[in-house]
Amino acid sequence: MKGTRIPLGSEIISINGHSKDQLLRVLGKYHTTDGYNTTGKKIGICIHFSKYYRYNFGLSDNFKVVYKKPRSKKVQSINITNVSYKKYYQNFDNRHSVKTDNKLFENIKKSDYYSLHKLNTTTAILTINSFSLGSDNDKTHLKYKSFLDSIFIDLNQRNYKNIIVDIRNNGGGTSPNDMITLSYLINSPQKEIRTAWVSFTEWIPYWKYFQIDIPFYLKPFAKSKLKKIIQEELPIVKNNRRYYKDILTYQPNINSFKGQVYLLTGPWVASAASLFASMLASNTEAIVIGEETSGGYYGHNGAFPVEYKLPKSKFTTRFSIVNLTQDVLIKDTQPFGRGIIPDFNIEQSFNDFIYNKDTQMNFTIDLIKKNK
Image (cartoon, rainbow, N blue to C red; front, side):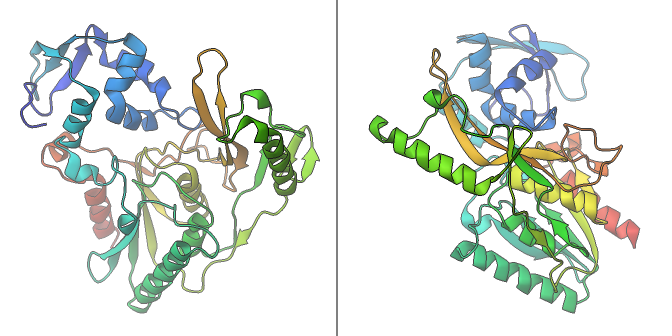
């Protein structure tokens, strides 16, 4: 960031005696990811470091930062006075890397949810920053379907050889936008999920701590309605679980892409976006480039969000309760409990950070040139 007393690109050794490894380890618990994934935690820490630091170590007036300048072995230290939360986020918004971070840390406008850029006469870049595009007959969803159909008709007619699908900024969204997109990139039928279940049969556990924004006297009616919804959506009961009955299978779209697919992933990718990425990585010849996703390869929780208030601390916690097992191949390269592991694990290089260049995109474009 311009104006800081620590030079751009410096390596932080410690803050108030806490090493960088310790900070990443202890602050990571405040940003959740699927399974044992850790790459996604650095995104949360990057955005909310100040808040997480205070959660764990308390309020500090001053910070002793030990660091090394770029390409230097000399260790230096500096004392920095605290600032307000508002000022911290203003500083974050003015960070050096904002150009190459793209939409990663921003509230993405709907106009930027998806786009197509033709790199040349053989390669196109399809950017999908969100699958929050409505469902079924929603106008937003229908517009997205029309967009997909028009671009893939055009790419096939013009005999495009490569498409780069960039979902690095995509944190998920609503069904069936993930599977509709997948249908344009597959050549065989694909099930949306293999199984979906909840770990109870009668009622959501700990109902008295369940949070719902209605007057208390309406809670019994809400409980009855939610119970009916669960019974209808998960009607099969076995082994102390409730299962979804109707799991859709998607056929390849008549206008599905005929060339090579390159998928760009990153730590932000989760939920519907990680389901999309896992199926593309498992069930097609797509080449995956980037970093491990925070969403799981074999499965994740989703579909039915609930919120509880803890009785003593009064903290609230929100999570989804349906266990989704994705219809993917078991691979030695994909450990259980991890996100989608790329075929080429590419992180931004130091020089590209300094000069605001997209290491992963440039690597992909070079790979396409070599594959010719």
